[in-house]
Length: 334
Image 1 (cartoon, rainbow, N blue to C red):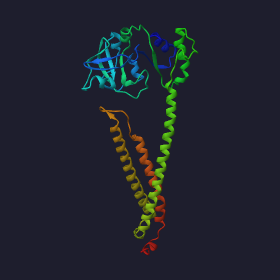
Image 2: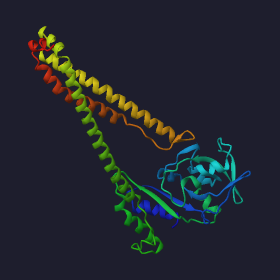
Image 3: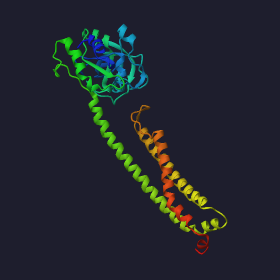
Image 4: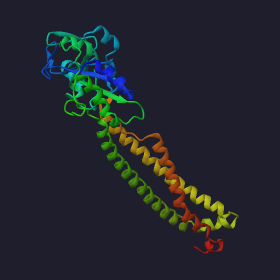
């Protein structure tokens, strides 16, 4: 492929949103980078600034490649986490410092700490990214492109565009559009759908277990309130005798049930948030959270309403029993 395929794709497949070229080092992982006495073996790649819109970098220091770097063929690079730790063992901001790859010096402009993206031609933390135009010139690659990454616009199903994408590229290179080996299209949508369906099932199971636990808790609260009503038979009878209406007795029992379930529910939410916060701290590296484990605000709000509703249901039976108590029978209870 060549750089003109980018414009061909944008013209013939207007449903695409971002189209970015990628060029790999012709020697694969055999490049050696030096900084002082330290050295490492990065996987060198060249790309355009649009690549960050497809594979989002997590910049710990500095910035990503921009259009001026491309236009002026600046000798700058963005290094991965592993490269940074092996070359700059003393730590600190490496931006502005120069590293040598083979016989060429490049200024470090950013450190990419992302490590969860899809690994193509090596892991993200092992990659050293150059401006595409500089890499084409440095490695004498002309207008060649090894890979093109693309995303669709909102609402576009990428699997429906695969054949058109292959056709737009192959027709210009005299390759049969039906030849899947001649031009390989790797659609991550398929993997995403598999993972999405898996986690949908896991989420459904979690909600099922959670609601079942709430229901079991409501039954327990109802039993506790039933025992409480029986022990307070005399008190309820006296209140009835001095003028308390059945509605007042009903509101008292249900209010106590709601308060009991709310206190227990909110304590559970706070305990869960604390545990998840500890998990986040355990997944923090150099001040960057690598995995987020937290309860969403609306999820916590829904849980509070669900607990309140369970409290109302749990208090209905004890409240009905309390309203059925007659003052005379309550006086004789002792």
